[in-house]
Image (tube, rainbow, N blue to C red):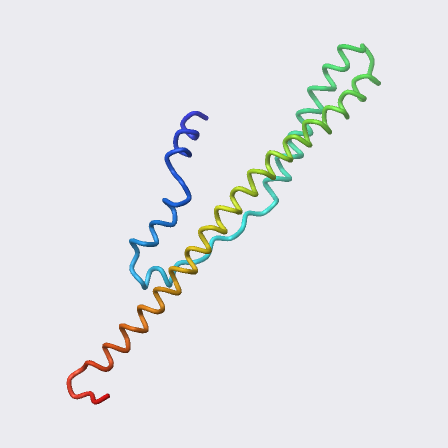
Length: 135
C-alpha cells in the first residue's frame, strides 16, 4: 500500500500525456483513445463489501444478542452500511479514473489535430518544392 502511494504521488496525469510530445507524428496519429472504465469493478466491490460487512455484523450481533434474529438484524444493517460505503469508494475511484482518461483523450485529440496539420504542410512542401515541378 505504501509503495502504491509513493508511486502515485510521483506519477501525475501530465506524465502520461507528456509522452505524446516526444512521439513522432505517425505514432500520434496511430494512437487510440483510452476507453472509459466500466462499472463492473464498482459493482464487484460493492457486493463484496456488503457480504463482508453483513457477515461481520451478523456474527457480532449474534454474539451480542445471543439469538439468530439479532444476528440477522445486525447482519442486514452491516451489509447495507459497509456495502454502501464500499460502493461509494469504488464509484469515487472510477470517477477519478474516468476523469484522467478524459483528460488524456482531450490532449490526444489536440496532438492528433496538430500532427495532421504538420503532415499536410510537409506533404504540400514536398510536392511543390521538387525539381521540375511548376506550381
